[in-house]
Length: 72
Image (cartoon, rainbow, N blue to C red; front, side):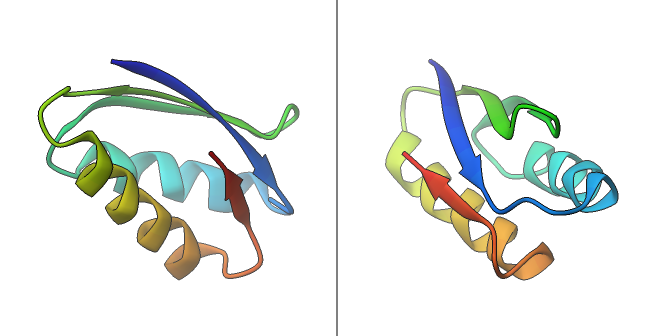
């Protein structure tokens, strides 16, 4: 399943790169790309546990940049 998620208050390109690397390691994530300029995350997820995976992604984003919000 491909999912595009709008991001809000992503302030740092370095943080975006850290998020990409961390999210790509989460079980159920096939790929993750973050476009810092457009504040958009593109995910390729396994269909089986998409909701659990998205929750883990939210937690990972908050750890790296607490002010960043995902608009799912």
